[in-house]
Image (tube, rainbow, N blue to C red):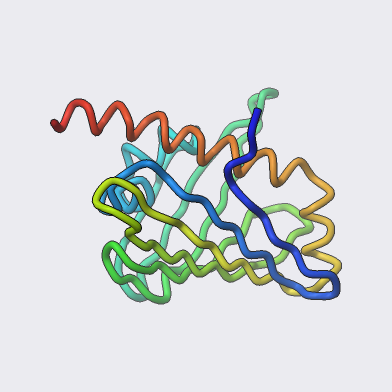
Length: 158
């Protein structure tokens, strides 16, 4: 399967730049990050809280195959509809610290757009630990789900 989501990790830096182009209108892609019903579908998680505003916050809950519940949360520091979300991300009870995520949404045409995520970790070691996981494969699969789910929504809305 082609990896459409590109993950750029420069040696010695504590950041990643993740880029994906979608065959979707910008407004529709943005909805995938701000509407709880859509977030739950593509992330496979339960949205406990999602306050899309400056100084807002979010909390999601996921259940692993063994039935264990995992919480992840963050604070939204900047929120510009259809343009940018700056937030923190923390998965509770894991060795990974808090990370900063800057999500930028850009229209390419009326029917295509680009998402660029700039993710900053507490250390180079932490970032490298994430990259040892099937991270790139996982984010690509999540973005593929966004494309599939929103394609269905696009058809319904026509």
